[in-house]
Length: 291
Image (cartoon, rainbow, N blue to C red; front, side):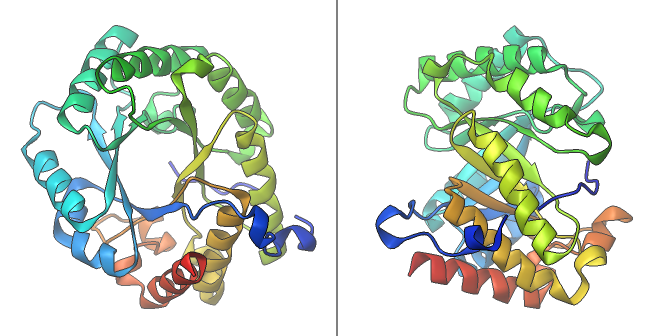
């Protein structure tokens, strides 16, 4: 679910970090569904993507398409991150979810695995943080038992404007209750609104709050065209640069390809393959980051 939230760093913090202390370049890629990746994986490679975030329903029984895209992406040098998610209809028990996470970890041993998505959103169950932590802990334990070296990303929390500081309490209650020895990294989704300075300062504040709990993966980020207009591409590139300097382990833009959605998705115009200006800006920002 995507909603405006008030975001915003002193100008000095937007400057490049010194070379000797610069963090490694993050994983860079796009968030989209299985069909979009099957049709456009090669084009994502041309945009210098090296990760692909793909939702995989926790109760899926048909893995044929996921098997194919896993092999295709691995062949292109693009590391998949499968988000094992669900909806408001039924949130599984920790045991049910852990059993499926274990199966997926064995099927895709080199993929990163993410536990749920936006558990604080009504679109994904509005799960209390303690229950989200229980799901995360059970799944991480199951994954570690079959694939000790797997990269595990925890649920991506989404800051919502009407909650004031509610998301801060949520992310804290979630990640503080996941044992550190499981090495679960932090997920964060960002859809900023506001002017350039406000956007950059607020992203910094939100990111630093999330980083209190571990390494951060920005698993969705996008600047809505209806808000940013002609500045969308340039600001998206600046956001990439800021998140890279802050040390994000992944920067994943939503989304890769146009779809048939209406309403918010059309207003947002975030699909990179349908927006040449945005694609060029992100390709350039990534190339500069890689040197």
